[in-house]
Image: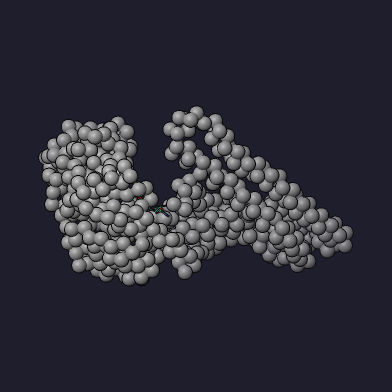
Length: 568
Ligand SMILES: Nc1ncnc2c1ncn2[C@@H]1O[C@H](COP(=O)(O)OP(=O)(O)O)[C@@H](O)[C@H]1O
Ligand SMILES: [Mg+2]
């Protein structure tokens, strides 16, 4: 539905006004060509028209020339006006399409990104937008312009001489026939080219993301070859496309010229048309010829633009996470400001997509408010899935998750997420200052408070110290502590951490644990850890296996159980 509304908006906002303006602009030059022809033919025609008899030749000539000049300039200005109108409205409408695309991508489920590698997404968001923004606007304008010119020239020749005007019919038929052949071929090759470029882009993103690995294995050359090939292919397709297109165009022109000249020779011979009219027709026809030439290209570009527009609308129409989040189909009611109480999973089952196997299956557990709970288990046990379930990022198949007495599925998704502070596995800092990284969107935090929190986590850095993108100029330990500082400032009641210490040395790990029992003492903290030692001071350890809760107990108990297991 949205797609059609958008198309209509496009049509109404840019197509119709532009057709009108361009039609006018296109009509003027051929009209004056014809007008001039009529006047000149008056010179040796005794029974000539009004202009000659009333004004006399001495006046008609300069008047015609100056009118012609003025109107040519006027027509040119009109064309520029039309172009600008097109440009502005194109910019406006494509920008809103782009904004809708971006918004839609923010609102889709996270699994969408598993299925669409970043290269493909970048290609879609930037490529489709680029084509719509530039190619689309220009080709739409040019096509309209071409069609208007053909129509005007046909009409004018028809006015001058109805028989000559009939010429336009076989020509248009020929054009349509060729266009029908040409258009699918052109758009098909363009599609192939787009796919090839997409492939190259995808690999480029691989290169950007994985450059360290490629360097490590000294495989840059292989990768560069793999990138260059699709680019080369896409260029070849373009060359082929040009040559092939030129051939078809040449055929249209030649066929067209043969018909016109045959008619003119016959017309002159039989006395159906005057030599002057023949000259005018030839001039107009030259114009028409180049118009046809351009039209074929423009139409094929228009086809290409349409396919990009379809993809852009596909992006906009992607199902949003709230639309396909749950089999149960509950709708989030009004958002409650703060949730409080124990976190309870009650026969909860989830998968990543509605049609994929269950990952957490009939999981029941309780995390008491204010306690520190560690989650352990082998890789693939479902630990991270449990966190994602709390964030409602997965497909809810059955059961419930409650915080206190409130089911998280009965409130709006964003207010659920607002309840949790998250400590990441790979702590990421943004380029800017330490102050910017700490305070983020919190606007009302004083520098004193920021320094205090830095002191609490035991970091000795200046608030104005510079940070490179990703935080490359800080050690993992420092980055992790900065992330903890960020969490303390955010002051959420529930804190989720997915393997926050996996890349930390023993000492930083201990520092983190101490913070759990001091500054974060009253918070509910859920930590996934791969080392049980990182959870020594926690209140409870849950061990997961295959999406179930395998066992739970205090750290000491669990350690002895696990130790016995590894000995056995
Ligand atoms: N985005 C995803 N799409 C589909 N399956 C996934 C996705 N993420 C994880 N899984 C699957 O869910 C299971 C549990 O994974 P996960 O919760 O990440 O385990 P853990 O964090 O304990 O290592 C694994 O079998 C994994 O393959
Ligand atoms: Mg995990």
